[in-house]
Image (cartoon, rainbow, N blue to C red; front, side, top):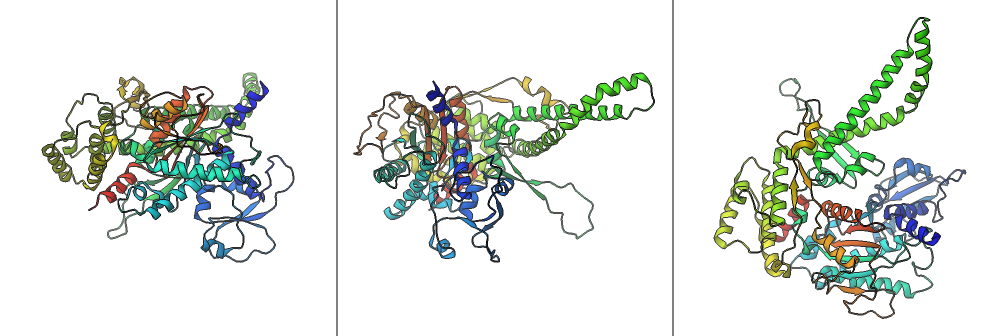
Amino acid sequence: MAAAAAATAAAAASIRERQTVALKRMLNFNVPHIKNSTGEPVWKVLIYDRFGQDIISPLLSVKELRDMGITLHLLLHSDRDPIPDVPAVYFVMPTEENIDRMCQVFDQYLNFITLEDDMFVLCNQNKELVSYRAINRPDITDTEMETVMDTIVDSLFCFFVTLGAVPIIRCSRGTAAEMVAVKLDKKLRENLRDARNSLFTGDTLGAGQFSFQRPLLVLVDRNIDLATPLHHTWTYQALVHDVLDFHLNRVNLEESSGVENSPAGARPKRKNKKSYDLTPVDKFWQKHKGSPFPEVAESVQQELESYRAQEDEVKRLKSIMGLEGEDEGAISMLSDNTAKLTSAVSSLPELLEKKRLIDLHTNVATAVLEHIKARKLDVYFEYEEKIMSKTTLDKSLLDIISDPDAGTPEDKMRLFLIYYISTQQAPSEADLEQYKKALTDAGCNLNPLQYIKQWKAFTKMASAPASYGSTTTKPMGLLSRVMNTGSQFVMEGVKNLVLKQQNLPVTRILDNLMEMKSNPETDDYRYFDPKMLRGNDSSVPRNKNPFQEAIVFVVGGGNYIEYQNLVDYIKGKQGKHILYGCSELFNATQFIKQLSQLGQK
């Protein structure tokens, strides 16, 4: 029983925790960091390049760095004065340029970025080198493709060293995902064979093994589902990523400054830029990042009302404490309320933090709401869900494309591409010309369509388009509180759509392989076990038991919609854990730009 509990505890250690432990160990000169040690830390300087900065920033705050003894953190190539007699930790990529700048590199195997407890991405700097476009360029040479695959495999290898586990690998055939699987299997196998220098022997990171059972790594290719990355979404985190500037867990907002009287000819007042970190410490974000947007708006409103009630109570108690006169009633009230006020005052820091988070989410949600209303994103989301789930459409696609008030040219192109990708029967040439004319009239660039046409003609998937979930629209009851005049959010005209859990293609593939279900979609997936002495080209899994832990990795880029779908799926599976990773994280705007570049003649 104790062993089972230990396994569960080890499994619960998230990749975020493990990478943080590894970073802290590095900052402690590769000695495990003891949290409650009373001694002073060794004061030191941290020097990183942009890659190192991207890895550290989602995990450790400036205060946490200071607690580790980091008095100064600098970019490697910035100009600085020498700092004598102070130890330094260098956290950089081992490039020739960086090595010229310093003497020795100790490889930490941390070359990936953890964004959530259960989500990681390979890189942020130079991500175009491993992008969907890079992998799918028609003119890519074999050597260039090898370089892209090696870059992905090196980062995945680092991920499994940090995890402290050797996975069983499954992948689809004839795709970039298969190339990654073959190379990763080889790299893991070679490291395991070198017993003296193997990174997987014993407890490499002092964090315990992942579990008694090895994890499953499912490598999927972005091309199995091109509709989801283009889809307009309805959950909070995915919407923030879609419509705002959201990057490495930080959202940048431009605050619209009111119209002010300024002298003629004066420069217009610049918009204030504000940045907010959306982190695990933010309880509201952790609770609601996967919620439908109307629910988020209502929850912000409820939090605000609860805060105001607490604030009013403190004010009321303060005014009572100021009572004058010796009247007995006042004195007995005073003694009753002293304890209450003491309690209220001691909770002030908590109250102030609550207010900070309410203000943050009021600003972020208001910015999202402006986009929803201006672009009719609720209409797009609902219509696309109907297309993807093969539900009867209530109005014609041409009408939405031609409606000047419905969305931007990019919104219209996203909608049409989803229709084109999802439809069993491609539209006739005559119909396609009509759509193309409407898209051009709406100001759309047709290059992405050019690429998707070629992709659909060449890909086997085109004969059986991926099936998607469906959505139900609930009555407006839930929004009644948000619709009232006292609310921060004016939600009039916005549909209250509530999501119904349906597995997206990536989730469905994972479910088949994790639960060992027989399904034509995944039955021919290749099977690799790097711990086996000889590699084999088999689709037959030796392990017949369902997996408790799995990592889904999308070669060619991922998105928050897929991540959220996996999170929702695993909620119903007690004791099971999933991690989602991707070679790069893009929103629809970034993805459509890549499709456009691929479609250029």
